[in-house]
Amino acid sequence: MAKPVIAIVGRPNVGKSTIFNRIVGERISIVEDISGVTRDRIYSQAEWLGKEFNLIDTGGIDLGDEPFLDQIKYQAEIAMEEADVIIFITNSRDSVTDADENVAKILYRTKKPVLLAVNKVDNPDMRAEIFDFYTLGLGEPYPISGSHGLGIGDLLDAAIGHFPEEEEEEYDDSVIKFSLIGRPNVGKSSIINAMLGEERVIVSSVAGTTRDAIDTQFTDNEGTEFVMIDTAGMRKRGKVYESTEKYSVMRALRAIERSDVVLVVLNAEEGIREQDKKVAGYAHEAGKGVIIVVNKWDTLDKDNNTVKDFERDIRSEFAYLSYAPIVFVSAVTKQRLNKLPEIIKRVSENQRLRIQSSVLNDVILDAVAMNPTPTDKGKRLRIFYATQVAIKPPTFVVFVNDPEMMHFSYSRFLENRIRDTFVFEGTPIRILTRQRK
Image (cartoon, rainbow, N blue to C red):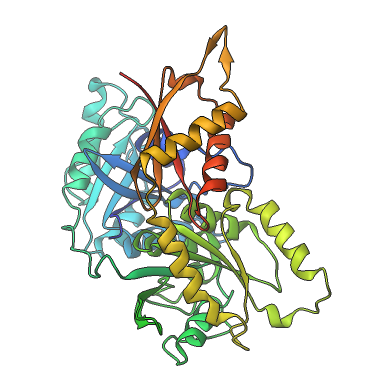
C-alpha cells in the first residue's frame, strides 16, 4: 500500500524547507556511501507516532520563468492533486500577505484537509501574533517554529489524524507486483503494450501522456501471476505537469511503494540523465528489486563495443545498483521483451530468499579469516554471530562488541562476501549492526 502524502505549500521565504527538514530529520541525508546516489529534496519519507508518510516540499519545484503568483498557484495545485493532507505555511513576522490570500483561495477549492501553520513563533509571548491569520478562513492556525522545533508535534498530530484508513493489500502475496519507472518519453507504456501484445495503455510521443495509474494482471506460460503497475502519469493537463521533470519523481514513488520489483527504464537514444538516477535511487532506498531496462535499442547504430560501452556507463553512473541486471530491449521490435517476465520472477525470488543462520555464520567466519575486522585505539571489532531478520529486501543483523567500530567499508566487504556466496541478483541487501547484550 502506498504511504499517505503530506504536502507543504506557501509563498517563498516562510520557512518551508526548514520545516521540511525538521519533520524529515536525518532521513533527508544521503545514507549511501557509494557515489552516484542522488536525492531530490522535493520528496522524502518521514515518520510520526509510528505512522510513515511521504512529505512533499513544493517550494522545491522549479517552474523556470513562470511569474511569481503563477508559481505559487502551480505549486498549490500540485499539492491539491497529490496530497492526502496539505500544510499551508505562513510567517508570523509578515502577518497576512496578498500572496497568502491567493494561496488560501486556491486551497478553498480542494476537498483535502488543510492545516494552517504560522511559522517563526519562536516563543510563547509571540502567540498573540497568530490571530490575524484567522482571516484566511482555514480554521485555527497552528503556531510553530521551524528553527526551534516548537509546535511541530501538535501539527503532525493533527496531520496524521486526517490520513485515510489503511486498505488491505488487493493482491495475494504470491502475485509478483512490478512497475516501470523512468523519465517521461522513455517508452514505459510502449513496453507494457508490447509485453501484453495489446493496446492497454495510451502511447504517445508527447511526454507525460499516462494520466492515471493502471494495474494490469497477466499470467505467464508457467502459471506465475504478475501485476504490472504503470506509474501514474499526469492526471491534469497543464504546463506544470508537462514541463516539471521533478514532479515525475513524486508519481514514481507511489508505484515504487506498491511494487516488489522495479524496472528502471532508460532511453538508449538519450543516454543516462540525472533524473534517471533520481528515480532509480528511490527504488534502491525503498529496498525493491531493480532491473535496468534500456529501451529503444533498435534505434542505435551498433558495433562490437556498443553493449560493453553502454554497460560500463550504467555501472559507473548507477554504482549503487551494481546488483541490478541490465536488459537491452526494443518496444517496437519486441527485442528481448520475452525475457523480462523470467528476469522479474528471478529477482522476486531473490528478494524473498532466506539464508539459514548456520550457513550465514560460516560465510561470515570465512570473511573475517580472509580480512580481519578493523581496530581502533587498540580495540578490535568482534563479530559474534549474524542472522537474517527480514526479506524484501533480505536484511541481516550482525551482533558485535561495538557497533561504532563497524566501518561502512567493512560492512560493504561483508555484503560482497554474502553476494559472492548466495544468489542475490537484482535485490539490495541490508546489513544492520547491533551490540550483543
